[in-house]
Image 1 (cartoon, rainbow, N blue to C red):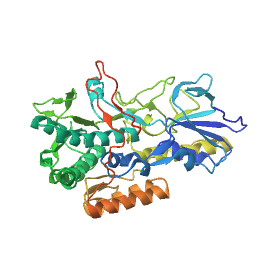
Image 2: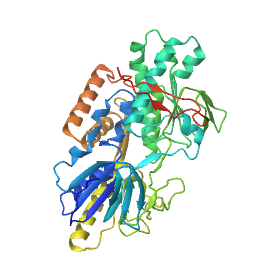
Image 3: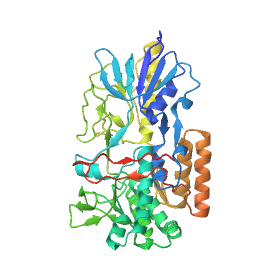
Image 4: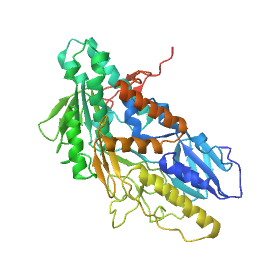
Length: 442
């Protein structure tokens, strides 16, 4: 890897998400060598991925080069790599660019989509956890309407314009709201020769309320907003299968659709070589103590989505959200500095819940804060301010804010571009290659 030898302790961080970047910032000025590994050379602001997939933002406005974030720190090194395994006996990680020794290892690998063992849905549905996946979804949405123009079959047209979103958490709700606004304000202008009024947006939730984890008032208000936008909300309904055409559920409800978007859950992105002691059977997270130390290891830590720290307040671990990762990254950084400098006892982590929010379209959002709960236009402004504040890079903030102002005034989404056509292969479980985006050169 060409990492220089040093007398300083070497801290290796795997993952350049919210937790990994927060930790690296805390450590990079100290007398230690910090090495960050990630399979992408950029940090992604995941809460706004849905706006990339619906043409509201270009991907470079929510991504930021990792090297640039920490370019001022002389003891920081970044390598573009995929980590294959950890050998804790020799304090070595194995990657696709070679091995690397560590003194302290921090797993900040985040999460991946959880299909709960349903291979058919995994093979045929769309997901939205990374920038490439968001671009795939954007291309598919636009290609569906292009194809609908070319078919004489009304049934096929309806399937192409029918979108089913599984999971009514913030991602599913925000995506449904964005698609509903596209249907209302953009499709009639872009496709005047297509009856886009027949387009449907469905959101399916297995529980009896949407935005689980938020207040009852927020859930009710968000559902009202979605229904006002024309979104069909199906509660107490669990999707059981999807073959690329037909969605079946545990009720009599079925959907004929060319696009099922899975936003129903996540699981920890674990690494081979370390025993994943799940604290929840389906979450696949490393169990850590109050100092984020992985159980059974003295010099391996985990933060963010991949870490499960149980307590009386959080018996199933902290929620898998950005704020937890950021706070754990900063806190672990302070603990490691204190421990390595003066061998002081580490301080237990205490999560400060700053609230939860979700937007459901222009002028519509719900915000739950520890002491205040509000909805409507003011909540929408708060949602925008918070997301702009946490974006990395002045340019990104300016670009996103400018796009939002333009979209609001013109009721438009300029980034509805098919940059790289997406080819959806049906029944990949059986024999077809994995769903992929075709590279186009011209």
